Length: 245
Ligand SMILES: Nc1ncnc2c1ncn2[C@@H]1O[C@H](COP(=O)(O)OP(=O)(O)O)[C@@H](O)[C@H]1O
Ligand SMILES: [Mg+2]
Image (tube, rainbow, N blue to C red; front, side, top):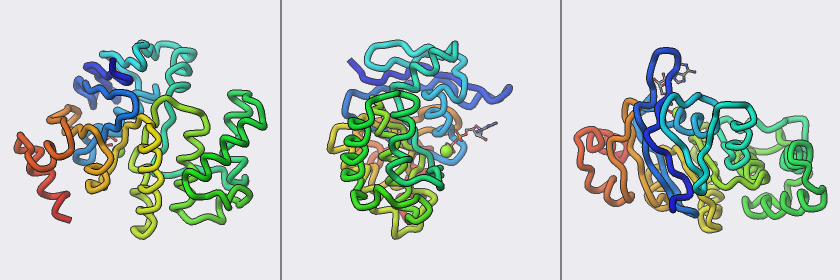
């Protein structure tokens, strides 16, 4: 049984339909990578999963449970199961790393403090920032801040982690440390849907690559299948441009 099943999902911005029937599924512990040209709807898929962009048709199931985004309560239920990290890490600059990680678990989830802090320290270890718990976020590099943002998402114990171009705003020399942290999460068995332009990384970690264009899935399959033997002209054309660099 799929851990995440997205079936024929459609979404609009005003009268513009930007998702035209998106279907894919992943098992627990798997990683799906959404790839494709700018404007193809990758971010909208993640936003729709989080209930940030309304789904007009189709369904989303997590662990066999149908997500229903029709009320604030239902949207909260969906958001309880997922965490999303964006390109801009949006840490609270006037707080320490530890405060950034523990704020939502303590104030929103109302989980016990000792447990929340222990989990925050474990996550900082996982992203290689054990020594930064008491640093303020504006004292960190972009790569370190993005790793804190990953840990902050995980502190909410999501069943699925959504990552939208988390390395795109970083200086090239900082990309590797963030990809390494995501690779560790993958090795821990985190189920993820990632949007990334780092094709080498996608090939390494993704179980499934979903190639989108103009609000539709053109092809999907194992990385080697999609990258080395694309079946459609659109995918061939796209990969010939992005894999050359
Ligand atoms: N807030 C918005 N209002 C109107 N149109 C939007 C909005 N956000 C995205 N779009 C449009 O939706 C389409 C898909 O965008 P997006 O999901 O951001 O693509 P991608 O992440 O693949 O670059 C694009 O045509 C984009 O212009
Ligand atoms: Mg996007």
